[in-house]
Amino acid sequence: MKQITFASRHHQLTNTNTWTPDSRWLAYDVRPSGASFTGETIERVNVNSGEVDVIYRATHGAHVGVVTVHPAEDKYVFIHGPENPDAGWHYDFHHRQGVIAHNGQVSRLDAMDITAPYTAGALRGGSHVHVFSPDGQYVSFTYNDHVLHERDPKLDLRNVGVAAPYGPVTPQGAHPREYAGTFWSVLVSHTTPMPQPGSDEINRAYEEGWVGNDRLAFIGDTVSVHGDKVPELFIVDLPKNEQDWKRAGDTPLQGMPDTMPAPPAGVAQRRLTFTHQKVFPGLVNVPRHWVRSNPQATQIAFLMRDDNGIVQLWLISPEGGEPRQLTRNESDIQSAFNWHPSGNMLGFVLENRIAQCDAATGEVTFLTSDHGNPPSGDAIVFSPDGDRVAWMEETAGFRQIWITETA
Image (cartoon, rainbow, N blue to C red; front, side, top):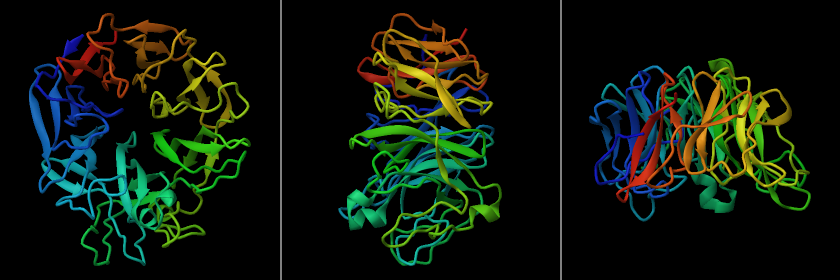
């Protein structure tokens, strides 16, 4: 094990895509905790030398965080909070945006238009946890809506969206908090405030993961016939070309004053898991995790309890079918997870150690032994070359970044 950050402050890795393509640098933000959005810089650290670069520094009272890296270029995307925040407009789920930093240049990812009639390709609220597709063309995100939040916060349902490189989008409204964006942004999930019990309807879509370059899987909260929340796995097939990204279905892409923005025509979510009758139904929300496909886009991994109540890794085909229980541990997996770039292994925290399991057999190998403090469950991230894995743990009172070799 090697500690690579040393300063007397916190360092926060995002749950995926934190390494530069050459496997030499790790990007991070400096929030004091994952839930406290008060960091002012996006940085990266060289895993060999410990050298630190500041990629971006926020100004005018804004804060930034949750950075991920492009798979092939020296390009970074992250959450940016409002500049000059005030009592009426400050950082919140529905008041944030994506920003891309590339070769010293900074651009807004998504446009925002909160003045009716709204603008197709623009959002009406906040995007967050931005992740490039494997080919780097698209960016996925989760979303909260300002317009519906103002009407009734219960109508502001979390959704999943995609920013496609078919902008720019320039809203024509006059609200001082509106802005243009370089990408065309739409939602790809569909939620409803009151799902029919026992149906495929959901009131929340979140923790998405790319399945190749043209599909996106995510967790959706269904409601059982008994009225209980049951998180299930869903998938959407994405449009193939610019024309399809911009073609509206029955509801306008940009939404209406009383409706959420809608997916493009032909984008329909499909449910992959049906666990309402299990002893422990549903994917787990603790530990928080993001569903992840292998690089070959043939298997989606997620966390769910077995019949003994133990949190295990499960796999399912993007085409559906019965999930396969991969791990058979005697104690819970304790973290989010990621696939090794080979697709042969997955990494996570187990028994307060960094572990990886064989993607075919589920056999677990521990990569670390004694930790000063348990590794954080937020992020276990393999380098693109597959040689190392990074995580965070408390060290001398601060969250620091550590790495170890995978073999």
